[in-house]
Image (cartoon, rainbow, N blue to C red; front, top):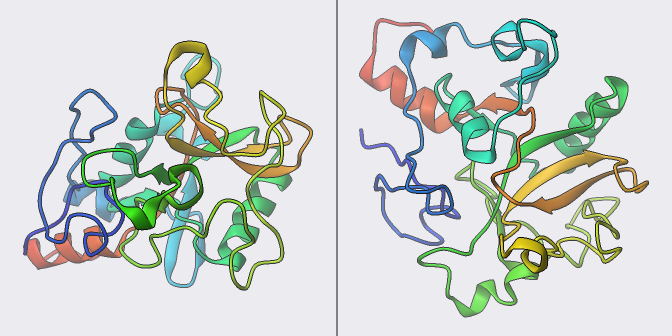
Length: 235
């Protein structure tokens, strides 16, 4: 069974076939492959619709040994730590899931996390249906289902609010790609921030090199791959 290691929209949306590719925004670094032993022993702190989840700040492996505080990773580093465990950073494609993670962040006083959200600004993204990019070009890289996000200037169907913040560094609605004017870095990755701009818990576009803790959820794709290639293990 061939598994996809690309970060694209869904394969049916951007590339059209399974392939292993470099993560174009991260200096040619590869997406991590699952490690069966880590998949078996992956943290399972809470569950939603048959998917297990964990917050990195509550796992000893991802805590600073001296301070006990959560370690922070760039966007790809966060994804790779999840993927080694047959998981991926969260894809908040459903209202109830979004609300669950939002409440978790609020109740645990977490400042921010990485999600799997990504801007389609690499090879294969120069398409009419993805323009304008800042409105129609966002997707969940951690899922093959419901990978396209709703336009950023609208409320997703069935949701009670637009999850994107109406403010940020420049006081403009998100995504604003504000860092590009500062250092020519594209804010191509999606973080969930907790009232950093006195705006509640909202989506913000962020430069992918920034470091944050993260939330992982089970990846059906990676779990199925490991099951098919390691029939004797139980996940």
